Image (cartoon, rainbow, N blue to C red; front, side, top):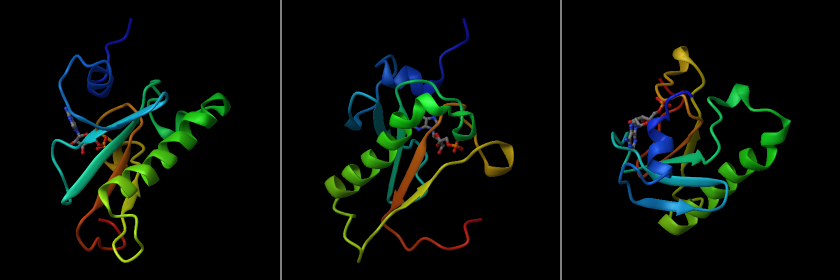
Length: 117
Ligand code: AMP
C-alpha cells in the first residue's frame, strides 16, 4: 500500500490543521508557508495525484474544488471584484509541484503580479 500524502493525513485528522472549509468531496486549510496574506489549499478527499491525471469519473470532484474556492472567498470577504483572489494549480516539476495530491492554491490579500514567476 502506498504511503499517504501529507494532505491525506490532514484530511484524515492525523495531522492537526484547522479546516477553513469542508464538504463531502473537498477540504481546505491554510498553507503552512503562505505566499500571500490569504493562502488556502483546497484539496480533494479522494487522492488525485495531479490535475492532468484526473479522469472522467473525477468531474464532480474537480467541480467541487472550484465551487469551494468561491465559497471560501465569500467567507473570507474577498469575493468582491474590488478585492479578488487567484487560483493556482501546479502540475509537475516545472510548475513547482511539491505535494503529489491535487490541490488548488487560493491566494489573496495583496496585489498579485502577472505573469506569475
Ligand atoms: P505545490 O508546490 O503546488 O505542490 O504546493 C504544495 C504546498 O503545500 C506548498 O505551498 C506548501 O507550503 C504546502 N504545504 C506543505 N506541507 C503542508 C502542511 N503540512 N500544511 C499546510 N500546507 C503545507
